[in-house]
Image (cartoon, rainbow, N blue to C red):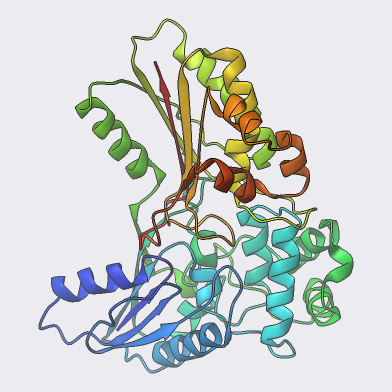
Length: 389
């Protein structure tokens, strides 16, 4: 029984079906990207980053498939970033609208993925190990990770851990919601549910010492390290010296972009040229304006006018490895030591104007510096590549 969910679901399901040809696999694919359905697997078009009716249909079907598993059967969960929104099964008393509104509020407030998924797990009948509880047979999870912080590749955070014990609690989820900058816009039903759970009126998600999940197998098969190593290998083939930043790039995008330029300046000191510096991670954006953009575009914009102060010839690209940066059609953006001059020639406002409006897309569109790839059918977070001449 195969359940594939997330941005890489279609490719993972297709590859798995080829590998086990003749084994009689069945199940479902829950994908936010258009794709070719895999034979014998039900296809569900789902939402991201906010769940949709398709997400609920996929989540309920996944629970039904797990419950129908016999003790001698194996359920294989193919998990990738985006699965949290792709498999949705609201707890009793909650609606899809409640969960969608809560997700949107937390995203606009800049809540990091671990905090967001903590809340998701405590509003769900499927996440936080509950899918595993519904199954009678053996469970194997193969995961591609987009989780970088605070614990890299944390099984309990990837896709909100449908088959993984959950160390977080209703009380923690409630505190995350109350601390959000837009907490006043959270649905009353969401807060009521979390308050009841924190008071012990609702059953907690299974914890790490829960023997019911002792036999679940989890294997990490892809992460940001693969993106870094792939970029570094290509750079060497092109004749660059390569330096890798091991520490993940995290934090609020506009601050992380400025810090990143200082980091690569230190990294580039006395290194052979031309030099390629590669890093990966995932930043957040706190939305206060009405513009368009994404975390990679905002990160790049924040770095643009610091780059020219530290380098005579350099370029930075920041991209989402899924090909989708925020609610835009861009994967990210490109800045170089000429960005400042070209922006002035185009009569653009100072970058602070676009950062304040969360309107980095408009800035980069005017300069033709958006990176457009389309959906890539994978997701291991964000990749940054700096080239120093």
